[in-house]
Length: 256
Ligand SMILES: Cc1cc2nc3c(=O)[nH]c(=O)nc-3n(C[C@H](O)[C@H](O)[C@H](O)COP(=O)(O)O)c2cc1C
Image (cartoon, rainbow, N blue to C red; front, side, top):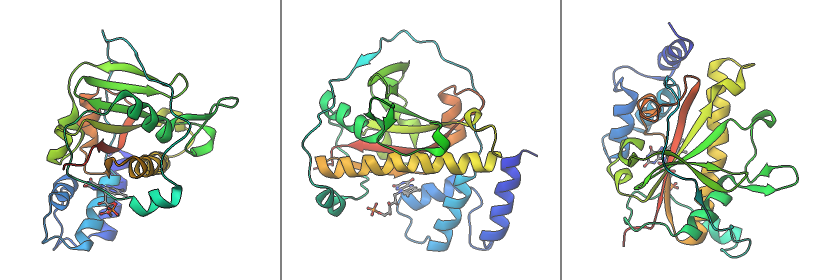
């Protein structure tokens, strides 16, 4: 039995009343976020806990024909005050299919995960133990791209439209952008697998909150999502063995 399976069993045995809970964490999350009003807070909590313990997927690297995409330089001014953005921050599940302009995409990625201290390479998010373990992938209509903070470019990863596979909710297939936060387990060799997932999820969450605040400031809609079949998505993305999907986050314009 693999370590993550042991952890999953342990969590379920402690936290879940088996009489009320659907044992499939993905089905549970899917029901929850499709608006199943019969679900209790207890069931929801159980699903999120179980989801957080899901396994990583094995995979290999992918060959590509697409060229890197330059982004315009991120704007260094503008936006609403932090207080205004905090007042507006919310999760949204109804999106227009309107694409994000390049400037908005550039500003969003810089806010999310960009380099804010070029001298040291420091980024807009804190991260575990001076080791950045997260990659930010973008699933858009024109394919999957990998954001490179250092050069502020999008590197081509896959040509296919993978948006529908980035989550269990219908809106993910048509919203213009789904960010996928992928962790490099191999960069955390000194910690046990369960803790790797914990640190990776914390790192991803900081990025997620930056995205929330940027979207609030710019009138964009977003939602940070755990309702993702991580192993399946990791396989589809052909992630190397030690890498795993933590969370995903949809971004777009709100549906009018
Ligand atoms: C760890 C985590 C996982 C989440 N997963 C999902 C998800 O899969 N789908 C979804 O629609 N919302 C998801 N959310 C968003 C929450 O449902 C939302 O933040 C919460 O209901 C409060 O709403 P608000 O963000 O508008 O204040 C998630 C939030 C967090 C922090």
